[in-house]
Image (cartoon, rainbow, N blue to C red):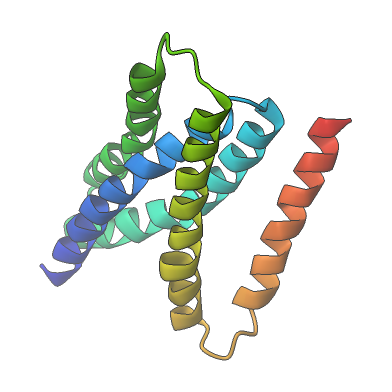
Length: 153
């Protein structure tokens, strides 16, 4: 029962967390598709452990792959929903440079907060000595740098 509760709470938290990520991913692609692709890759990679955090406890609590999948799917679909909200809010608008500056400032603030307040502390919690998470963080930076080089060519 505790595992099920943990999985469901994780699903709800990730669902809430994914809406601004969807907005951030959509907005990051507005003026530069390369940036949008890089952000989408980073978000997709970071969604893998989020899905596991939901699916594993629900599966072990219920023995049902379908229930684990459904809770993970519901939380994951919040990201494209966030992108859809951003699309609908910005549809047909003639965006000025100031509007882009405001949106990119908000998105970078959201993404920085997510990285510093959620992702890094969680990584450090699972690897307190920093033997793995620090290398993984730099590995993630390398993936993004490589994708920038790849898509800029």
